[in-house]
Image (tube, rainbow, N blue to C red; front, side):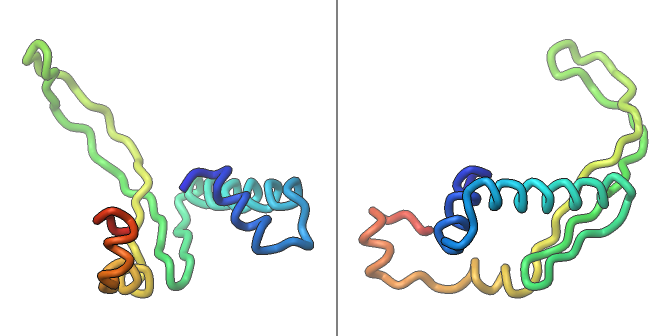
Length: 107
């Protein structure tokens, strides 16, 4: 799902809001999540999962093209851990009729 698909779906589910309102809400939500992660805070969405920042130490790496050893600097990377409810919904068995309807693809 893309950001525009998310906005369209939310606007459809909430006809009392304009597309512009939904765009601002989604932008504000993502901005707040990004800012919290930038402050090294945890962002938890109950039933969905938690976003944290993991820190990777500096290390010696290898240039795959030349084989030369290169120093990789320390860095911070975002990390997502799915919540219990999300894991359960993803692992829920798909009815056979739904699989046939989608041409064998699970959705």
